[in-house]
Length: 525
Image 1 (spheres, rainbow, N blue to C red):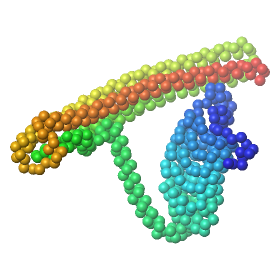
Image 2 (cartoon, rainbow, N blue to C red):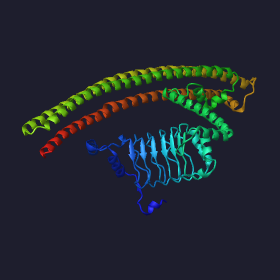
Image 3 (spheres, rainbow, N blue to C red):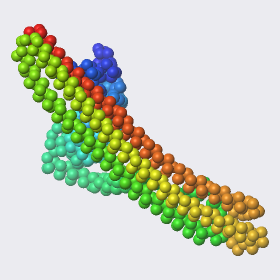
């Protein structure tokens, strides 16, 4: 425990502490008064300082979703946690705390500058997701294993590294070792690495580094392949054609079909299976190609929709700014005139004229908002119609393709039934040329048994095809429904509500300004 515990009461980050810090660091003067009276939304805060507050535990940070800079230095924090929601964080200072382990940073993938100076950290670890790291300070910790520095090689963008004050810095080879193995850095312990020092370090460790480079290239290639596959699989899921670019659906029909697996061993089935598989997988590939093509069209439609929305917003915003600028010019002129008016009646007249202009501004801004609402309503209706048409066409064509799969299955079922009856007759007459295994022979005890087996296999296959169709139809319908609902809420409800609140807040502020001016004149200022 920190010695500070003897004299200072530890604290946890709570709502009161956050509110106070935000207000203290927020805008000043008139803007600050407005922000304080209306309340500051934590989601709007981009920078926050919480240093020297005796914080023991990080908590209640979930509302700061747009925070990019956070200072938590000079506290008594023992564990890095509670930061998962700060996904936009770029700069984080946790120096001068009591942290013993690097952890809790996996979600901070945008982090570029991380300071953990003067803590109790004994190992460099748990930082793999911080691939955008440019600056890292781990000075004055308890790092003893120099080889642990190799962990930092994965940060290809790392340019500044501070490790000074750790036990391994006493080793004679420290600087050369770090320079050689963490070759991306330009500054080590706040000193520029000159070319001569870099060359000497590289020469000293070149053999082991060459082997390491080879292993890294292999690992990088594997990573790129996996990343490419993940991107492709995400695209296939987005197009609802995952599992259709190969034999997955075909093989899935037999995965739970125990009878079908046995009957594959019947004489004469081999060639039948080859043809069946080839044609079935070919139709799946057609669905796959068609699905990707239609997904591209849907995404283009969505992109065009948002372009229309932004164009309407920009045009409407520009018109609103024009009205506000005209008003502000009038306000400046009126306020200047009022400062020289001593006649109360004339002053009252100016106030009335000003308030009338405020009301007219409100009318103009609200008219623009109503105009935008009408525009959005038309844009959304057209988008919804297009989306529904595209979705219906997609579903109809997919069902057509899968009907072909069912036809293939039905034909295959008839051929299997024919082969099974012929085989049964040969088994009964003991005229079967080929040997069959016991599992298959048990199906030929009588006609009903083998017919039931063939029918059971057929039912399993049809169920797999039906399930695939239901899955694709359900998913695209769900996507269309969620997309439309989200747009209706964000553009028609949430955006309109926020815009009306903005207009009303502006108008209230403009009215308060004239009232405050009147009060000042009444007091003789």
